[in-house]
Amino acid sequence: MLLYFVFGAIGSLLKDIVNDNCLTLPSIKKGKFYLGFFGGMVIGAIAGYLTDHSIIMAFTSGFTGASVITMLTAKKKEETVTETPSIEEQIKSIALEYGVDQVLALNVANCESGLNIKATNTNTDGSVDRGLYQINNK
Image 1: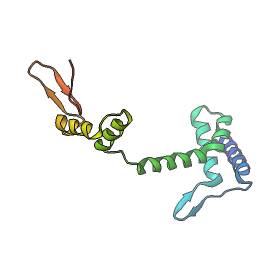
Image 2: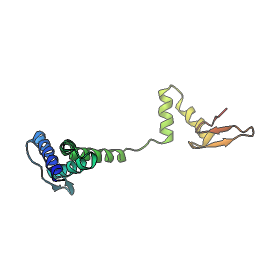
Image 3: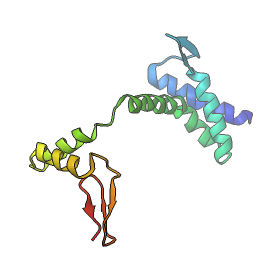
Image 4: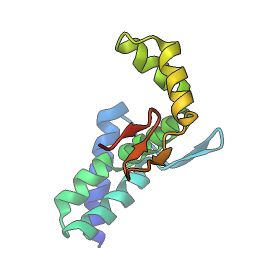
């Protein structure tokens, strides 16, 4: 296991040198904990040991490990910030894209389903109307 830590450390050290020519130590800045060089070393060792007992994997994981975790957590934050547009906004946007009157498209969906995307209605002949515009399965 020590060999994996060594190669993880070499990969992490090389990344720090290439990145800004200095060694980054673990630190807390503005209430956030940064892994630094040691984080890359640990990530490299664990990845090298768990995947295929490869020192090459430990080295490459040490090189990219802390960066990958930083990118993943940053992407997660971006995803939680964005909001899904409302049904009304989506209908208007699609109607505009296809040259359909936005008010008409919205009014028809409202009359057919009350803007409920999961609306269903079973007819007397057994056919089923589904969705915003109550499209029949026949």
